[in-house]
Image (cartoon, rainbow, N blue to C red; front, top):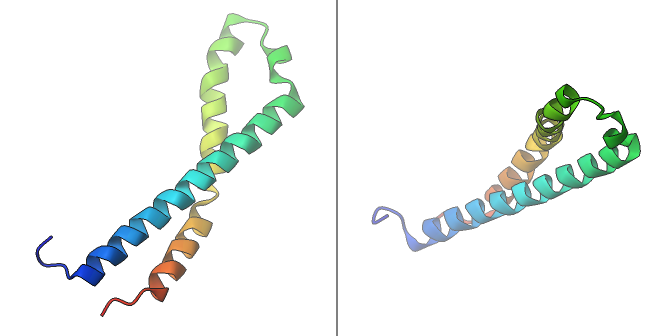
Length: 89
């Protein structure tokens, strides 16, 4: 890190922090939306066999992944616009 100035180091730290915050918000919202959808669909009433129970977790994980990945363009836009406001010189 000796090749980075104090301003650059501070800016990179701010960018990583902003990215982590945006990802945490996106993860929380994806979990909330998934929980609401699972409750609305009452999926526990559809779990009647061992196969359906065994496939419930992977299907739920896949649904959460799709919801979470939908936030990628927004996260990139927010972090990019934040990075453009920083003074790098």
